[in-house]
Image (spheres, rainbow, N blue to C red):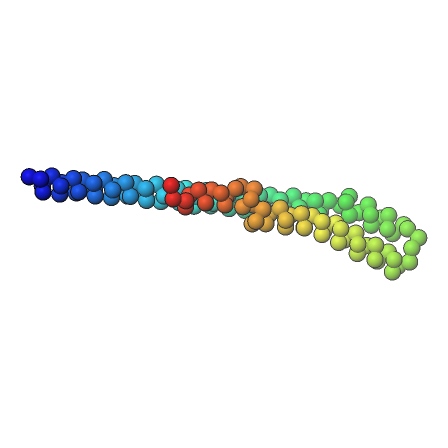
Length: 129
């Protein structure tokens, strides 16, 4: 009878241990799946933000007043053609370069990971409790 009791206790403890391990793994799998969907959502939001910002960027670049006013002033200035050309090149670089650099920096993967705290979310998902 004593052997039967020991075997049943061992079997019971083993079963409980396996169930706990299975439960722990199941929770980890759910966390990983949640992290996956979270990252897919963030990626889609990022993609939509890029489209919106690109549209706004195009609208900004196409705003004739921003470009036309300096060009008209440049043409009316009493400077040589070479000086006007250099000033025009600087204006073009400033009109296009500054917004492009801003958008490039804002939509970088590194900044989005930091902004959305995705790294922390992933670390919590794969961390063993």
